[in-house]
Image (cartoon, protein in one colour):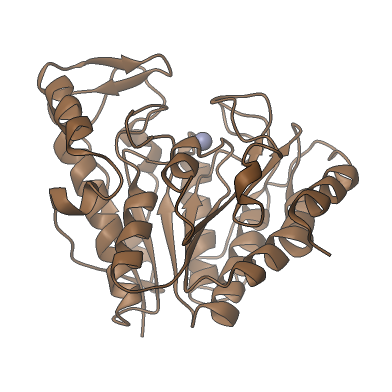
Length: 339
Ligand SMILES: [Zn+2]
C-alpha cells in the first residue's frame, strides 16, 4: 500500500493582501516526490458536510459567497464567489484521503487543501476557515464504522472549531498544541472539564520549539492517545508553528516537524493499524509550508529525511532559546490523570 495525497490549491479563492493566499502553496514540488502518489477525489456531498455543519449554515455561507467578495468575520475571513465550491472541494479531498486509508486502499495520506478548516465551528466560518475539513473527515470515518478517531492539531493556533464539533462526541478525541494568548483565544488547559482524557489543550509560551514539542509528544500526548485507543489518527497539520512564520511566535524547525510527524506515524502504526491522515491547516511562509509538507511525506513513507531523494533542509533551527515547560507538563498530567 502506498502513501497518497489529494491536492486542492484553490487559486480562485483569493483576497487582496490576505495571508491565506494561493501563494502559500507555490513552492510545493509534489510531482517530484516519489514517496507519495496523487489520489482522485470529488466535491463533498452536502450529506457528508452536514454531519458537522447544519444545512442552515451551509445556506448562509453559500449566500455570503454569492454576494462576495467580502469579509464574513473579523479574523478577517474572506469569501469570493468561488469560495463555496473551493471549500466543498477541500472537504471532498479530505474525505477522499480519509476513505482511502480507512478502506485500506492506501497506507496513509495527506490532504493538501485550502481553504483551511480547524477554526470553522459547526455554526460559524471563522479564522480564514469556511468548512471544518478534519472534523468532516472524522465524522465520516465514524459513520463508516470506526469506534473512535483522534485529531492531533499542531497548528500554532487552537482549533476551536474542531473542539466545538467534538464537544459532546464521545467517539472523537482532540489534542491541540498552540501558542497561548493569540487568536482565537480559546484552548486553555482547563477549557473542557467535562472531557478530560478526550479533549486536551496544551497552550504554549512563545518560542516553544523542537525540544518542547518532543517532550509534550513523548510525555503526555502518547500516553493520552494510547488510553483513548483511536482507530484512526487525523492530524491538523499547520506549519505556522515554524519559528519564522510571519503571523505567530512558536519555535519549531523543519526537523522538529519531521520528528513530531514521525512520532504520530509511529503511534498510528502501534494503535491504528497504520491509519493516519494529515490535513493541511495554516502556515504563511511558502518555504516553511513546502519544507513541512516534505517532512510529513518523509514521516509517512518511513524514509529518513537525510536520505530521501528530496532531503530536508536541516538549516533552519530556531535561533531563540526555548522556555522551560516542566510545570505545564505536570499540570497537564494532573488535569488528565496521566502517570
Ligand atoms: Zn494557524
